[in-house]
View 1: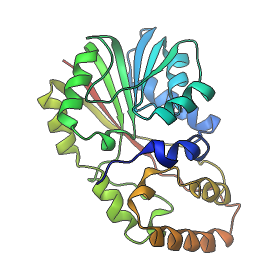
View 2 (view 1 turned 45 degrees about the vertical axis):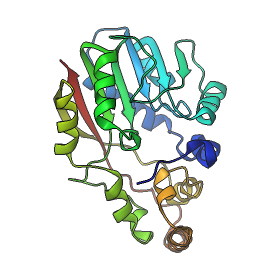
View 3 (view 1 turned 90 degrees about the horizontal axis):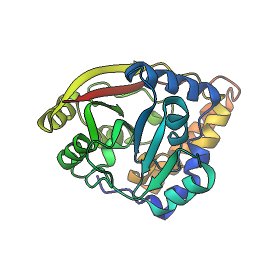
View 4 (view 1 turned 90 degrees about the vertical axis):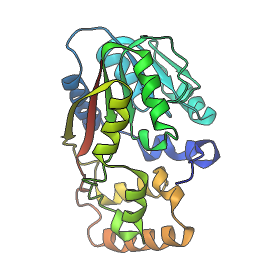
Length: 253
């Protein structure tokens, strides 16, 4: 799949289209805390931090400085303007070339970002370098072994085909990280609260803040939204269905 340019369009809609509710923040905070050591403070890395959706949350929850590494200048601008925190810094960089010294952080989070990494072996090695021995990597990702039943996806022609092409099976992910010196810790799902009504969910989806739309023809997108509008009109205030989120945990040797 071609690289997604977040400087082109997505930076303008991402924060609004991907905003977290308070209940979702709580669910993710608890999920991260359950997978990280109890000791505090913890120094963190938010890989592909984007507009800072999780970066201040990580600093507040775990008490240490958190570095948000994001290749898109426009996304970093949004983060600095709207997701500032005294313990957070946003810097340019990529998984393959992290601007951090060896052993600089205790944990790293990659939230729906690993599929954007072009050289995954180099990225796994760099993460191994910047985490301290015994550090934890949290990857929120999808796996082709068990792709989520997203409420909207079957409305878009070839939508599931596009989703499958973006991700990889657990065996490939595990092989990449084990070759770089990581040990698989756990693979689990996080139950998430509904984000609101279907009408609200469709309004957020129309911002096209999900990068999957960058891989669809415009005709498919128009057809999909027309179909979703028809479905949602039947009961717009119904609670939107949400799929659990997969988190894969690795430990640095």
